[in-house]
Length: 201
Length: 384
Image 1 (cartoon, chains in turn purple, orange):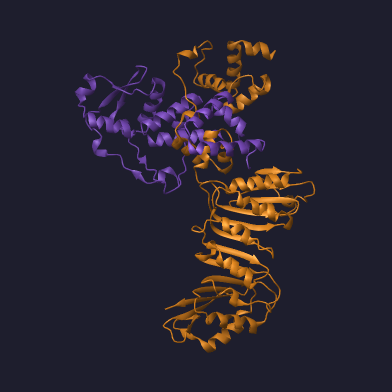
Image 2 (tube, one colour):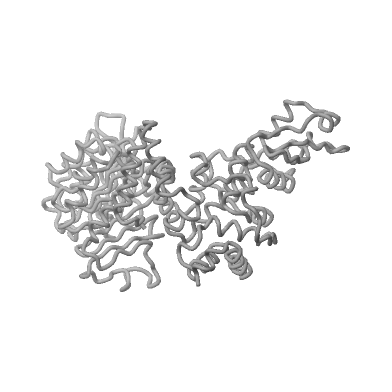
């Protein structure tokens, strides 16, 4: 079943300003400012609720300070808002887990995500934080596609995973945190590695 | 030469630019780069960073990266996002990812595995493990194997996902993998088919189940057993609240054996237990051994065509006080007709349906509905 056919929540058409478009101003954590249309903001559940709660008028959005998004830098936020503007007015997919979804990456999204992994992982994090369902879908799909035809060792390089030393430090931290599952996972993982690093395929 | 290139960042970036201009994907260009300058010539993320800049037509070779905000990696992502990424992968990609790092391994183990159907064939010198009903398979063999899948057993172009060939420890490897398949915390199999396990490997195979961290969730299990009571070795490790159907191919249905199967928790509430009787003569067969099961099926693939004996079996079933449902598969065409003729004498016709008849149970409001399905199957079901 394609995403297009998945159950959707209709975008609130009544909320679309007909005569005068309202643009909100947002500021990234490195003080970059962005103007984003009200319709584009609806793609983000977090931002949509925020602006609704603020109840700004068209004068307020011009005169009051830009809304600060503390956790996201300008480079990432630029990508997020480019995506929201391109997809404004589109239905938001509902992922209730009842039907397995097949995500397809549209051409615009593919081009937007033609970025290095460091930035892509930040984009995913931002999509999750701002609750932009479809951006999260396509960006996760992009990461999943990277696994095609790669061995575990190659994936380690692609996914920017920490060195063995950092891994050891993380292991110690996990044990200190006394996560009951940590030791079990450790043992299972080490067992697989002892088998020569082969997968069971 | 490579050392000179690698020691000069600007030259190195020029090399990346040249790769970028080839028009290939970033991974292909990275592999080409490493082939030319050494596998550890550059970290992937460094290569990818410059490659993507050049792709965006940002050609400043002396750009200062330290101006950029810090990046993230997959390890920084929350578990639910990792799960979302993993769900989008196919079977092989997901399980390869599990071996990348502990965090991904943990994330994979929280997901329902992407396989629902397993079939195990363990011969003396080779082992096959079919995944999702022949979609994929693993193949393991020692040097004595006759390469079954290449000689017509499968399509000529069938390529195993994993091929562990001509290795002395092939069986150890196969058993480890089978254990790994079963030992997934969220595994829910629709079907497990233990099609064949050679005598010399049965004990090792059975031992896999003893080592599992939890009882396996399987809806339908088929076990091809012999006179070694192998089902008693496997069934106790199946989740009794999940199993719906058990199929046992047995060569003897002795009272003691059937009694031990009946006593197992896994067999008590199962919707259907089917016995495929793998012997040639009916003389030793006693249907009374099976009537403890309220719902069961018998398949008579034996050559004996003794209609009288088969009718005797049906009559015995009709006297049972506990039986709810039985399916008798007489396997060969022509066996049902004489029984139907005999049953016509002691049953009533159900109006409007010539294939269904009614056997009234004496001193009871209940009756047995008898249906003839196709050319070989008789269904007997208690009704009120």
